[in-house]
Image (tube, rainbow, N blue to C red; front, side, top):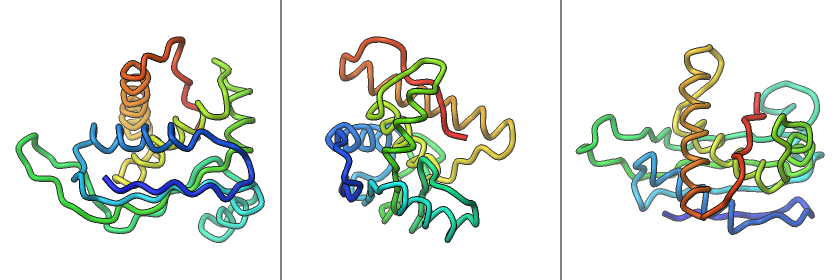
Length: 165
């Protein structure tokens, strides 16, 4: 799996954890091991510009996903996953920090960025949360991936509650 993490935010973030959880999520979703993903970490001003440009919404947001080849997980266990460019995930640590502090289970900015990375991966794979059934599926899968990764890493304590909207 080729994953690039590019921190342009000026904020120190745990880039290795972002890389690790992205790799874990893609493996769990059975995405071809030669697929490519880019994760870009930006400041609030850059995120706000992207949010306005692509969503026509004011203010910075936590995560945005820009799919390229519209890869999807294989439908059956024996299907060969397609290879390709997944696309870009853009994260904003300033928003992540605030969300982590305001979450019902308060957690760090880095924990929030890990959650947002998984959220972004799922969006790149075609998952959405506009409808209640879609939201239940996506957020359930997101929690299972984050919990599985945390267990594999031996991390203790509650997993971050979903704070993305």
